[in-house]
Amino acid sequence: MAPAVRPAIGALCGLIAAGAGLAAAEVVGAITRPEATPLLVVGAAVIDLVPRPLKEFAVATFGTADKAVLLGGMAVTLAALAALVGSAARRRPAIGDAGIVLAGLISLVAALTRPDGGLLDGLPSLLGAAVAIALLRLLIARAPREAPRQEADDLAPASSPNSAKAAEAPDATPEDTGGFDRRRFVLVAGAAAAVSAGAGACARWYAASKAESVAAARKITLPAPASPAPPFPDGADLELEGLAPFLTPSTAFFRIDTALSVPRIDATTWTLRIHGRGVTERQYSFDDLLNRSDLMERDITLACVSNPVGGSYIGNARWIGVPLATLLKEAGVRPPTEGGPADQLVSRSSDGMTIGTPVADVLDGRDAMLALGMNGRPLLPEHGFPVRMLVPGLYGYVSACKWIVEIELTTFDAFDAYWVPRGWSDRAPIKTQSRIDTPTSGARIDAGRVAVAGAAWAQRVGVDAVEVRVDDGPWRPARLAEEDTTDTWRQWVLEWEAEPGEHRLSVRATDRNGTVQTEDEAPPAPDGATGWHTIDVTVE
Ligand SMILES: Nc1nc2c(c(=O)[nH]1)N[C@H]1C(S)=C(S)[C@@H](COP(=O)(O)O)O[C@H]1N2
Ligand SMILES: [Mo]
Image 1 (cartoon, rainbow, N blue to C red):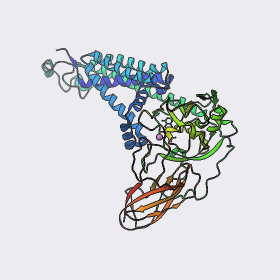
Image 2 (image 1 turned 180 degrees about the vertical axis):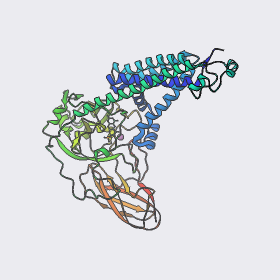
Image 3 (image 1 turned 60 degrees about the vertical axis):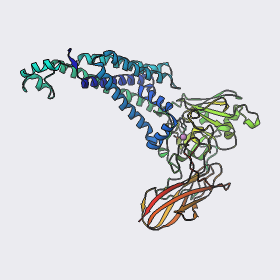
């Protein structure tokens, strides 16, 4: 029997080779495009491919940490596969090559099929795979071999605890063929691991500093908007403990998107192209938009269709932007009712997201905008810097394209936006909803007077009433905070004399048309959750 490498050593070789491959890819990616490195492109492909139920499960279980969970899961899976391939490659080096080629191919295909990708995006995957193959072969060739057990036993009696090989490594066993082999291997493997870790870290650091310099180009001063929003009325924010503030700070604003790494866009080179049916093609730079004389400022509440009843994927901010209707009319867009040939506006982002919005909604007089600012500052990268779209009354996935670079006028018949083939409705107005913020579900509270408070929204129409029900009691009207606009959420509070025991609280809103929020429970898919937010509390 030929001397063999132990499975654990093979697995270690596989791990180091995989790490070195990823590090090499990071180095190449840092120079070409950091978004095109294997973990990110494969992760992005996974996000695009997961079936709706799994995506819903991930959002429901991990919330906005879903991306970290995905990357972590991929790292663990990759490590396990690398160990397997490495240990198989001990006897059959071709298996090692094949495993890495396969991984490289998956990564290559993922990189080249990214909507924002170019041919250069294949480089990190290719070079990473080449480095991993070469290193795995080298490590396996250098790995210490154990003699078949029979021979080893014959040799064993000669070695004593004081012999050189036992002293050099505490876990050395009599099967080792020699200290020299082992030391060489430890050196080579250790060096490979250290160089990979160092190079990977440097590449990451370099990519991040490049992104920072792009962000520095963001030292932009927003001009005073021609149409400012009046300060929101006194009393729109009840300022109660546990109640979400009326205006959501940008850093606390929910973030929902498919971008594994936040696109870093240089505003000085950014352009927006408007084209398609019934328009004269136009192109705008960031300065074109910033210097317009018709900037408007509006408070608009943005909700995600994935928001479960009572959930937190909703926020309210003060946005500054260009009136989208004006911009479109300049390009010749007419509403379908006036003979316009397009009924769908498709916005595209730098990372290839497509979002379809009814042209009629954008042109019906609501404050649809291309937002340049959020809460008095340029947009944060996470929320779409340099420019995003907003259309009051529509869920984010059919209206709020971040990192927007293109607007195409087309029809709903001709084009399905990203989420439509994935099982979500092509039209999705925000449904009337209400939420109890305080007390929280499962809370233990003291008997006596308790402020039950939350928010309600019925965008475009306005909230006219909110009622709270305790156990099987009657619906009691809550006190409404002042209304800012019909496009913002509205706070409410009910003073409740809480008596000891277990209690169940429910809330429902009524809009200005007199329509009561439906009790029927619907999940987020395909077009938004419904039902009454209900919580249980213990009063002591
Ligand atoms: N480019 C891009 N824009 C996007 C998305 C996305 O995945 N990519 N997600 C949309 C969805 S589903 C929502 S709810 C809003 C969320 O905006 P926010 O992250 O700023 O809160 O952005 C929308 N715009
Ligand atoms: Mo969303």
